[in-house]
Image (cartoon, rainbow, N blue to C red; front, side):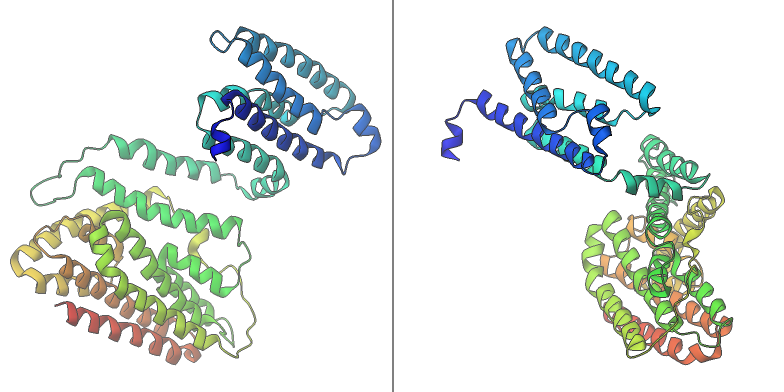
Length: 425
């Protein structure tokens, strides 16, 4: 490092530019390896030497006059003319319209002002991004083929609700009865939708034909209740339900992870207090699921997860928002009148519905009158109540052969949760 500090800065920058340009050129050469000799001679544009020289040319023309940049600008115009001639010839001779090599050449030429004017980490990020995107051409094509007609509409919806609507909302409380601000209200919708959307994308693009366990794990990020219902109904269609009990418990284990993620997003104090309890429940879920899978051979089933549904449906957002507002009012009234005991009872009742709106009310500090321990206790009770409902769904809707295993798994989680809640009282 001492030696490098004594080197002229222009020399260091020249070496950096030459190295980056050479790397880009070597990556281009790799793409020429599988090309026929005729194409190499007649059509292909440059490799390692060409791109390295383009980078060096940009360096020379930049340092000649770094203030007005006139030589550099003239150079890029001349380079663009030559690249344009090559592109027109490519279209005429090969009927191909790709601009990738031309754009990469222009980026290589522009490395010098980037190195001089921007942090080196940013320049390295740009170079690495170029290398990666050129290399994953086939992968990008495969992913794009999986996009349905409405995929970009769905993505646009998420960008609108997260990047446009959210920053515009006020931060002051809605009313004396509802201590949540419109910003916090919408942030809750964005957070839950974001986790669900992530699960949706992973399932669709990376695990389109995933087995039961992976599908149930992704379904747990979306909705463990919906996943339990679908798995239970599917088990009735088969003589050997196989992995269904383990999958149902696995989805519930992921539910705890989802709640922990939401806690860290909205209230780190509560999240840190909640972490050991939820981690124990996650480990119990995983251990029991692995026990069910041990030394068993099952036939894999596919496409059973609810995560193929659009997680950003406007109707779903309205229902979530309505529940969020309702629980904000009800929880405030219950806490005001009945204190911590009221929070525990309400959590028990809320478990029969979607618990996310209620839990997010607690995490966002809408109930300032209760302690962190009470919020943690209420969260654990709500998950226990929700597990009770899922157990009932599985017992009623599922194949009789899964009932005992599911009942044992949920009973363990419920009893441990009750123990945690009593400890926190």
